[in-house]
Length: 331
Image 1 (cartoon, rainbow, N blue to C red):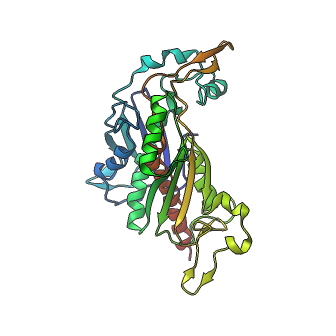
Image 2: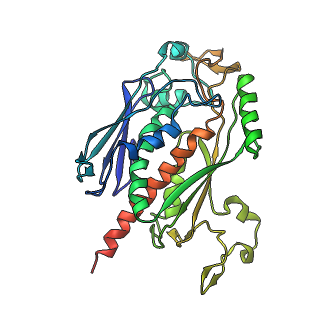
Image 3: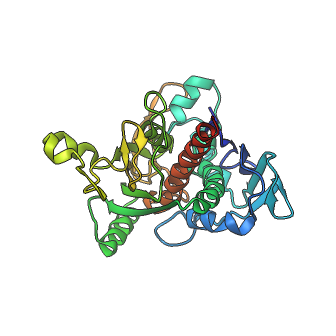
């Protein structure tokens, strides 16, 4: 499945070492001001080669708008966005034509489809998220006009919470040919109450699905998340007063519907599976072998995943806002 959403529907395309990565947006409201500068800053935050903490792959990730915009405004037609790949080094991946990389989708993709693009992981590469971020930027532009803002931040990397210690931890992993993961928090502010459906379209379920759809994410919690398992009901409930809620343990969602409070989401991001340390694996012939993944890889994907997570929350929220508008039009 390469599509996401109901009312604001996106379909992403492209591979890590193909011509480019892109997305088609269907259902974007018309007459909205939109140009490249509304999208490019989000891609700049996601792109590689910006510091010693990220992959050294040098990509400008310049966005091209192919359709759906006329005289600076959306027309209601599908919006096609494209980023061309300019700095592939496919030769670095030739060994992986016959060897499966541990922690990657190489094996499972091969078993499902009987064919795979071994160059950078193809569609399973983190580079696939370019389309999500580009579409998310469009969603953010729409949501901001509704008074909704989305921000993300790094809470921890490999157990470290201090920014300086986080940087040291990433560099230590890089120097030893290893990688580290971490925790990211995303907060949506200004959301109206009433977003989401109470049974199978719960807002928290949609958010969890969106977050788990990011390749490196292995866990999601909303509000106090797993901590609620150790609480009493009297501790976990958010008391209501004439001025509103007095706490936000629920993370802004009750019964699958937004409460009007901040929506708070945290995700657990796994260590980058491409590491130089030698690991055991098997090849396409079923033989046990060893592998060392050289090349240009992030020692920690956490810093670059922040705009991706923000984009996915934006895509869920715009979809729910547009769904809510349907009900408001019913007499």
